[in-house]
Image (cartoon, rainbow, N blue to C red; front, top):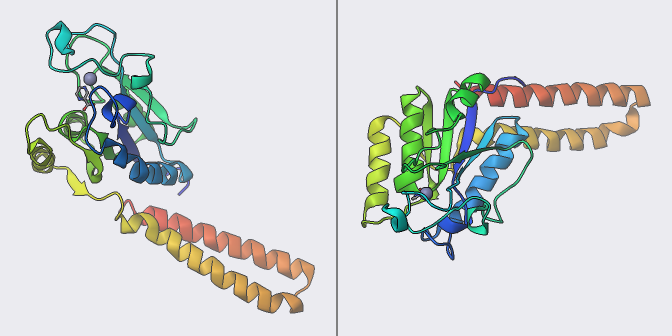
Length: 246
Ligand code: VGL
Ligand code: ZN
């Protein structure tokens, strides 16, 4: 099922200014990097789309308290604060979506971007969402994804809240759940890794069998054997991948 790309990963605003040391630092914001890197690697390995959104503000915007808004100056275009966290996986296949270009508080990665169009063109039906911050950009991205008719997994352990008010993070999770998102854990996606574990275990078994039998096989037999085992492993992977969508 090589072309079965019905799922996408959206990594929201994992940028320096939202991480410890940044101008709008989210406590423990850097901790989302590791689980999100793992998921990005896996999605890319499977040829499934990965998006990174970034808050990408002009130097002067009503989004900032200095110009009548709510927030300290953050994520100004082409500054180091707007760069992705240096530990965040980078890959040419990752699609970057920039938002917050105007004067409005646009928190969702869908707001003023072509994200919905790209997802539609790719035939995506389900999005997995994590990043910063739970109570603003992650929440609004999740709610918009649901409004666009997508299934949503909100990855609770791969997001952190700003919490202007204590409890905002939990309230945001509740709101996402009530709106229809599945609240999930990035590090516990059994169907996500199970098929690969099956393949890995199987290949180990193959190695042993081949080692034992190789002595008695001709070169041609050995080659044919390897090719058929390769096909079997490919089928297993395809079956495992297919089952994650059912
Ligand atoms: C965000 C506040 C202001 C976010 C962006 O990415 O959650 N929060 N701008
Ligand atoms: Zn912002």
